[in-house]
Image (cartoon, rainbow, N blue to C red; front, side, top):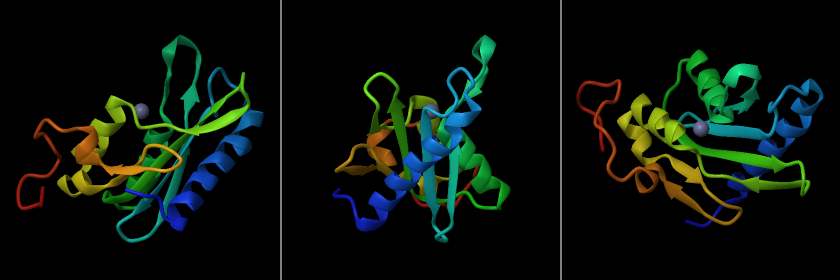
Length: 144
Ligand SMILES: [Zn+2]
């Protein structure tokens, strides 16, 4: 699917997260900014966290945690942008396997979440996780 004007605004916002978080300057913190829009139209964001001893998490984790903290779990659109210190370039990056699985487990409705995977394309989560495990946190009655 082609990106909309709103999708491009999400990409811009994800870049801004990286810029804002740079002064914290931990091991790997701030190299990925993630932004999501919920089914209700609310926007939540997060940044990757990297500490010593392998402690850390993806930017998507933080964005999803912020969403859950506000009582929501259905994602309309999500994007992550990475920053390469060597090339000084920002690049849209698809979510890692753990993030794909986490989005899926939140709700079967997220099977149709739009995931921006490049500067020009987005796909449904079900295209990124075609043979997903059925263990969502919901019991019955949701669409697939
Ligand atoms: Zn991830």
